[in-house]
Image (cartoon, rainbow, N blue to C red; front, side):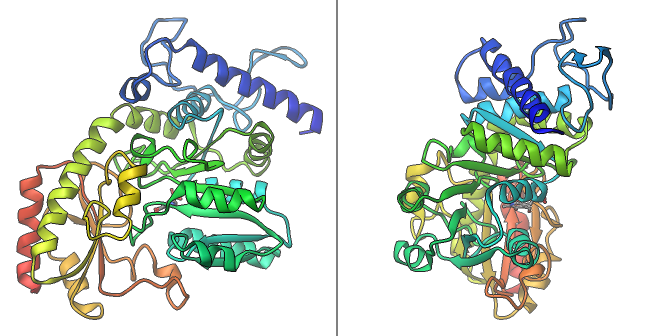
Length: 406
Ligand code: PLP
């Protein structure tokens, strides 16, 4: 796309999103917006769920005269609805959808960094983020430091003249560290850098990073936003027009876009996000209470526990503490590996954030890519994604499995 065409495309798609937001008269509460954001009844038929727009190409009345869409990699009505939805929920001016959370991360980094630049990532970043930065961006001339973002002196100490981006994740995967987004934004902005927050674990229902001073929010919509373990996707939300234009350019140029059906599934998932998150949070609280008193368990990592180092920050910047709980069991990996194979309801599987409860061993599964690196995960760690089943059933399931390994 030429520069002029790119600008025209950009103005058209952002105008489309802004119009959708203005047209939503249905109220301001998060639950209300989650149900309606980005979605209007189909003007042709009145269908309250607009049809999934599968077309890869769109009729033009004359060369250059089209009805808002030309080719589906550049823009597609179902994707535009999802992009308007995430922008509205994150209180952002712009939303962008991608084929996975990693594709979203890649587009953000590609738009923000140039060879020679430096990025600060969390000392316990999601393993995939670490791999992307260390194994894709480093060979392309980007330098990076992994830093405890809760330690202001460590962040300042790692700072370089070339630092352009601080990448935060809160709570983190899988250690559930909580980062004070406002404090990180202050340090970064004083020095002219941008802050990106991976909001996958909290979702916009529990935490609004842009309100707290972040510049860009990313999501793996594979997780809570989709919510049903049946779609892989990524989203970006941000306020700055110029940065959004650069990311939209990467989205179209590199083409890691989600298909229309995947966009529909995420839009559908988002409608129940608030009610699902309430149950995830309540169930995680019950599970953490069991773990905190079970003799087979070592450390419990859950921001809702007053003993968690990030508890006070989490209380301040989140509406609740989320549905993820990690803990250690035994020494080394033996007890942890036995435990993850012993539950009945908690299914042994990667991923998180869906209605069904999952259990996994990060060192050998989701975070195996960080093995041998400074971000390697404790082999005695077990991660739970607490689902929306009956809390009593989940607690019983875990208690039996822990009794067996203990
Ligand atoms: N960010 C976080 C916090 C994640 O947990 C994940 C995946 O587990 C990702 C990003 C990557 O998302 P995806 O698997 O959709 O590419």
